[in-house]
Image 1 (cartoon, helix red, strand yellow):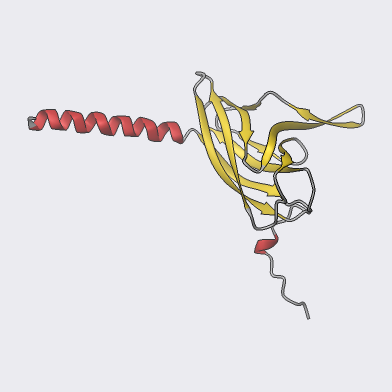
Image 2 (image 1 turned 135 degrees about the vertical axis):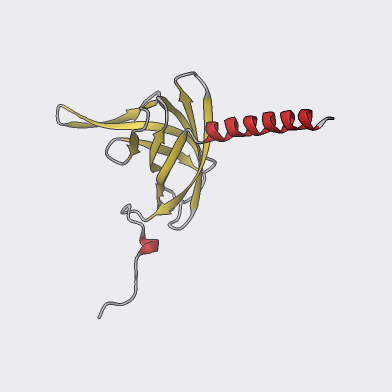
Length: 160
């Protein structure tokens, strides 16, 4: 192989790597957490902020800790709070979309065991961009106390 052929192959390889790196940088998940449960509790919620660099939508979430995972929306209609599954969540380009207890959120149902504060829950988000390309994003969400606060960062020493 000549030096020119070698250089061409190297450049093609680097270009392909660059495209792969760009594809994985399309969606960012931050502030992910899962609410702790008590023994025997059948479900819990997962919360996070999702930002896509192009118009996309969150199609689904999966986790090995639950038999069924659904994206739900909490809403108020005629002074009645409603919660139910949605097909997807729109992720407008460059805008952070927050999944929290008061709006869109992820329901982990049919839990395989108790989710304890300090654990890490694996979540796989499936996002589809406007071109129809799907991407799986792996997230390890820390488990927070039943009140939603992150007690792991608090000083639980005695107060005098």
